[in-house]
Image (cartoon, rainbow, N blue to C red):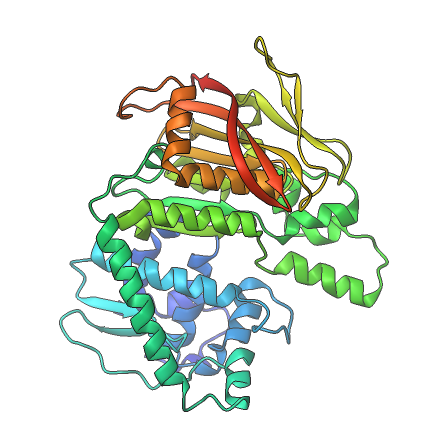
Length: 433
């Protein structure tokens, strides 16, 4: 094989290593459904593969990966932005799933050892030795060494692993044979992947731009430039860039995501968590999805607005928010207004909706709160058996659900100091796709 440094610049990595069994294995992996549906993991895997096969380990630092794969600015702080670590964990999981399912007959295995971003390849029947690759060089690790925890960290990590591992084992053991309650069971199914999509920092920038933006605007490569004023103070510009680039979500979204992990039980390994901007639109045709947040925080829900009776309306940027009841039934209001702002007391509203996806090959569950309190209330409702029973009663469901049933439910949450204290179902609709 030629020395890569002597090859003409127009020879691509794929052409150069097309006959290499390692790259042939990676091509098979990249053709599988989890990678076809992801917008970031294929690019990440290709980059790690190229640098690993070339033995360019200097390019496999967290900061270099963030710049090359995720478009982070040169010199950004990995300690403040965990995008690389989050996606590498997802990639490691996807690789393990491949070799447990489609790739179980492969004779060559690829893995990403913890403590390194370099890929390792080994025979499926040979246990690999520990690789001598550079460890992660993030600022977090540097600060740990500065504070003198280096010698104690292995023991702390071991103790944490034992505690967390025992708790995880007990939880899995308790839930292994437990049935998944409806409507969670409509989107968490045996053998199927479920993507939980939470809001991210980009949605907050509409307050700066003082204008609404569509899903198409949100997904444009030049999104940041299109919504920010041309002349900004340097510190403000850095803050805006940080908000746009960081994986920031709300407490309510995190709580809802943890509820799904708990209720999914032994099937929680099929859950994938991503932010709204990392979702690939082509992926929506297949599989199950959970969208957390209303259209002002998670623009993907706007794809389903025309199929729902209750629509989120914002009266001016950052103004009052309410649900518009498109076709009020007797005894219902035309509008249901929520809290003036997150953290205040009073009543907030939210909708829980279950729909088939566009191709009919999966389901979509949406949790839309006017404010964070409303979204959090939906997570509490799904986690509480009595609240789920009340939902079944409101939808006139009797017994277990064996056939698909699509619906939307308007929920009221009474809040005190930013926390839901009581939940009630106000109105429901059965959806006939």
